[in-house]
Length: 471
Image (cartoon, rainbow, N blue to C red; front, side, top):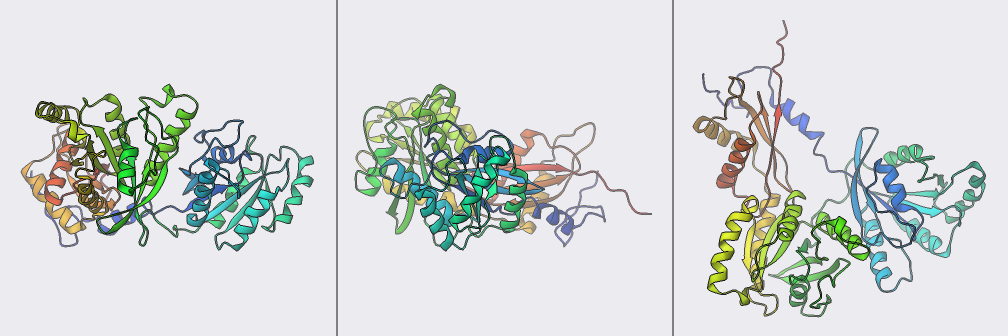
């Protein structure tokens, strides 16, 4: 079999009807950043029910008590062929104290960063003083706002809902999130209000990079947060599970400002946690989704557990840059170090790419080493490889180590491109399926050639049928 060549246009193929522009155009539609719709309102007006209705599936937690949703949680939605993020928020109380004050901050931040806003009001109650304060704030915002009168389950409630014109946000869109009444028309209006591309992307210029401190309960996350901030920012207690809500702190490290989020320890399974622990687990997942790099704390003085591995997998599956910090290193003797090395080699083979730092949150030992580890991981997370360099490298790899044959045929890679960053995602256009083992081989070789320390790398294969030539 003859070896394919790499033409000057960057397409590795011997088929004249395969064109560079064809592949690039195909990817453009799939990796365009999506705009965000924030769903806001006071507690218990049906925001999460409406989010579920928009999504067409049950994702947001719904309960008949106010304040179940405490953090901003984002979900991917699609309507009429367009994709966008839907951000569920906690209820906004202008005079909120304590926990409700934290909820209010989350809702306000969603309003500041969203591309369109849905303000949900309970039509059966009417406009409250809280609704009026929210509406006054939103009238000053440049972001498009859609006023939704929820719980309009019948025509007789429409007259009462019409009174919401008084909020000064235009015509209230009458819906019943529970029954789906009016939600199709609402979604049409949402698409009209959302821009084609978001006004703000994750980790954009000017803002501090977001770091999520994750790990099982009582591993030292809050102690590390307090050491970094130099104050008792997070509650520390020997009882596992002290932290419930994600706690945000701006931290000066290495001459930069970072936004750290201390999260609740994740249980072995969400289904095993009840009440407050269950919702804490959901909010921790949300904090991880909104972060750019995760710092995973592991108690180095104890054996690596199933909980540790599950949290690590969650960070990797979320596509976040990852630093693994082995905490309580001051308690580790020589025997434990040798044992830990064997555990890492045996149990953590899937995340060998993660940056590793040995620290002591209690004494502050080597905490500053987190900075270069996070910077390297984020640099890899943001890295982009040119199409020419990628295909030249791939040509050499395929020539030296061809993929396994399938059905008596040797799959050929016709073209490769980096579809996106954060994390680096590569798409291979092939004439046949590539075995999972060979894809892992390519990922390993990618890392050897281009780096990507501290970042997951995704390699997907798109099998293309040979096109019939025009006669």
